[in-house]
Image (cartoon, rainbow, N blue to C red; front, top):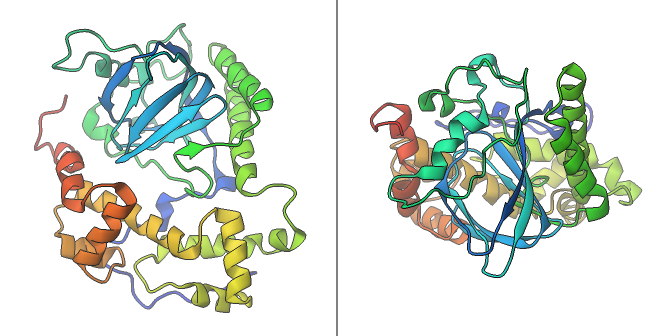
Length: 353
């Protein structure tokens, strides 16, 4: 391998999430499932939901507040919100504001046929949740038919949806709230993608992918701007390999000096390059990866907190609990109570809604 060579640990920790669940940004082959344009009046409250694919919500005007994965985010004109699968979320539009947005449901790579589904079929039930007196504002009703686009898909089974592979991309490129996009450049791309969605034929599907890639490229440019110093670009592969190493061996004792020593750079300079290209310090990024995998284990296994702490690289359950609460706003136990039903649903222990 050219560039940075990192020696792999002798053994992997039990229960470790494999790196193949991650896909590099330069390897994505996006599948656009659904595109919509919505207007929400002030005071709108959408019921809590989860999604089974990925979603981008681009604010054209106004603002909205998202409660997502234990944190609160406010999105305004020109900003982009990214939602990942299986994480609980809801949306509130403040009184006196009108929220206009484009919504895109997608996969980072084209799914196998058995894992494909129509967004309208799967998500419409969320508009009339039990316990609500009136329908919630429609987020998924399709304004027009799109013949030839997975229209033959059988009604999706929730157990199958919970098994979807759903590869993820580096959160350094796609955090939940994305700011800094040029509105005059980005908004027309979303509009064209929305208009193209109703068209027929292979050409339309290729244009969808092309337009989506334009959006993804613009987001990536925020983390890797073209004007970056040449030295940073020269070492971009070094940092990329370090990121991949962290994602695969996050349970091990990884430090800035360790990564820097394998790159032949000083810790100070390596740390500077790492933050320029990921938006986080090495320790912050390692913690983010560990907590993301801990959330997965909490919601999909019955492992004890001691075991999860050990399987995600924390020294003990007390330190794990402290860091988890700092990162998510709630304790691991509370998180499991809120989201632990996902694995029980997958096993058929709970009735599917």
